[in-house]
Picture 1: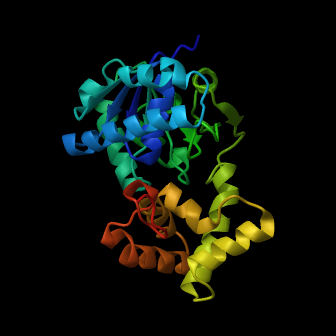
Picture 2: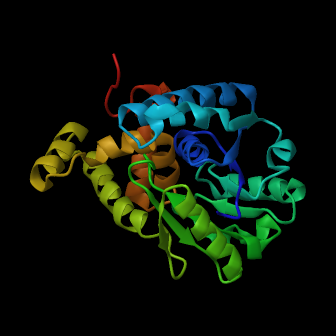
Length: 286
């Protein structure tokens, strides 16, 4: 059994909710933390939808009461100190902004128990860029999940030169406990393995749109038909969430920044954030 029994997830967006729910589904106690009760109310709805999805998609044990039992293992808090008071592991899934992440860790370091391991789910930022803000660089690393983690169950684990090997091993064991396939990254790499492959692909699609080469539907259809892939890049953007796409793109080169400006003006400012809100590049639901 993993040494990690009590987990706190900071951030209850699309992926944060998935991480928390999968951890609870695997039998561990979870606290879902977000900034206010409005965010937590939305999180409760996401967890209910995840429970239904696990049943609908035939996740082993879900239909036999496991999906509902997982909900009972999740508690909610907008009080950071209370949320992490008993945490063996804190997984941070806040917006992909270096300033937000560093501020979060500075606050977290002041209230978390000394034994607590900190893990960032950052998609692109190096853990060494955040480590000093944690107050415990030896107990800090990156733990990155793919979207729809119950199906795409990789967990990329990447430490810094300061990460204690025993802490690294504990997080590998935790990943296995919650049904993930641990991908051990040997050295720091922006984007780990998955996003080192995925981000250039998505960026190329964004550049085609910015340059007026083709519309999202045509770009996606070209990729699906030409490769046999189940989804095109703009469908993936909608699943990842356009806020995440914006935050990543605005840190890139001129074309990526132009794409960031485009999705902010046409989509984010209109409340169209992707699948989570029912509309992004595509419309979803009724």
